[in-house]
Length: 566
Ligand code: ADP
Ligand code: MG
Image (cartoon, rainbow, N blue to C red):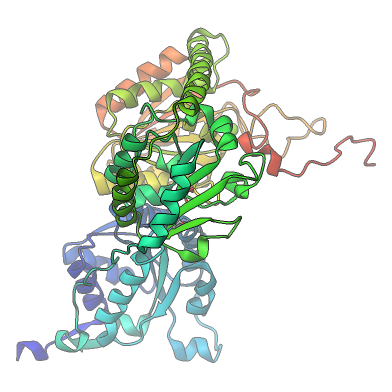
């Protein structure tokens, strides 16, 4: 009888992923998952093969952020698993939903520590670095395992799930009837706060003289752009986007206070946080970034986030979309609008800062020294013409300058170093953005950041993806002008004359080398029009770039006077 027919664990795993609408796997194969990947292709999934596991896991995580449902990564056992683990940890910190599946050794070898080829107790090693880890020991549990992994990844605060797949389970057999494969019902249920929680928030907003909204990547992930727009348009409360919330409302929206960050945050008496944590990226909620007297309203799906850094006077637990729908009604009923004198004060500051910024941009176009502004403003100009292009960015100064210079108009079109400020995410994120959306992608990379996963250029070229990798080369980490000891390379020094663009040529992509604004603009337009994989190597001056970029305050400095330390 047909339903007596038995299928392998691998077969059933692929069925369960497909049943739940998962189409792509990002991975790096080897023992014991090679045939699993082949079978996934045969059964109609798309498998994207990477050169290092962390980039594959980054790609799966980015797919999760972009789509709002888990991306899937695949690695081999022990070393492959460990290479993926850093990405599993950092993307979980970012609250990106995804599933990292690693092949592993069979239990009876691992549990008696008998020694296996690439043998490691991966399941227990993964646990502290992800939202949850599961091991599936029987083919017949595959439907349940995938359902559990999906629901854990996307419900509540999203995150990475580790699914341990022992070799024996891959080839174990079960009938489809026993494996019970199904589509998860309502994987991320809506949640609304109680009426009194809404009242508390409305009271604070009603009495606020200097209200401000901070938008975080949680708001972008929650697809709350309509609700956020309604809130801002009805109340006129100035807003500031965190870097990955840029584009949730267009950066040129009249209520954007991004150009008056210190004034608006420092002067705020009521701060409404929407999907943004008060972590180090917001000075842990401390003064002087925020006033000690400011009161906070925070919308988050995870109630343990409230009071993590300072008192939250009006916590609103729930998914951002539902919370804002309810809040918007109450705010309208209460007739809340931001006081005009506060808006005028911010507008004055925004205008004067914008003028200064525009003058700096203009000067950079004709400057004899090629620097960050000259290299990056052409990307902004292109983005205003083609706002559906995706931007991925990493580096120190390259990241900081790009965040300020590149105006975003659409939500979830910017991915960057995220909550940990991690380097080496760029090409993995770029690959996922191109694969999942079919849109062109610009990966804006510092020369150091690019190096972490530069070999993924081969992946980009192999799949012929429309990705432009811009390497802003100042010859070093932070910059290339440092010299500590005579006749020795400094710890921050990289090759200022490196022709990174040749890497693209090596794999059949296009290459551009630019040393001024006009060349950069020209190269970028050509690269965009071609739709082909390419690298633009923008060689800027070695002296450009501050130590640690905008976060130099986090960098302990020592007395480096050589004689004093002898
Ligand atoms: P940013 O770095 O942009 O400030 P964070 O990553 O610090 O953003 O904060 C994102 C927050 O959004 C997390 O605390 C997370 O729990 C929350 N979050 C994620 N998805 C949702 C959702 N659908 N509804 C409500 N909160 C969410
Ligand atoms: Mg550099």
